Image 1 (cartoon, rainbow, N blue to C red):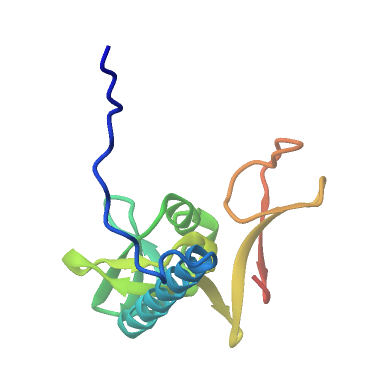
Image 2: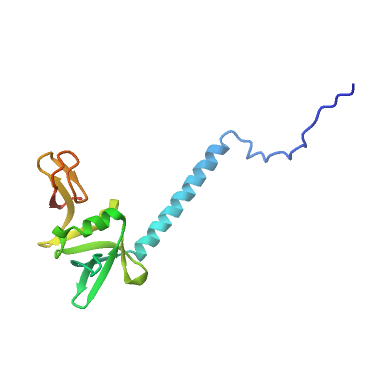
Length: 162
């Protein structure tokens, strides 16, 4: 019997740099650095297009939150679900507020993500951040609603620190 071994086609040799033991680590570091640079560029671009507006918090006829920035201009606010939940809290209605974000299509103002603390109440020349407090359980939350422990309604509390 004639047995022949199957031979795989020969691949071209790798470049000596690719064969170095630490090359994979070096490549990883370079890729991470490039990702960081791109992230910084994105943040810079985001900061250029970012804006802060101030006005009195109101609601549109269909219930969306909006800021009255001048007697004849109402800017509709949009954002993630937590942001909208806070901005539609009746206890904040009529208060002077500031929000950070960017203008979006349709004349809306897209508030920056909730975790960035992109909205605040302006009171007596101070910037106060919105939080909710349960005095029974000593639990602070950042969206309105009932306490996760005792199930009582949380109280609006404005604080100088986020």
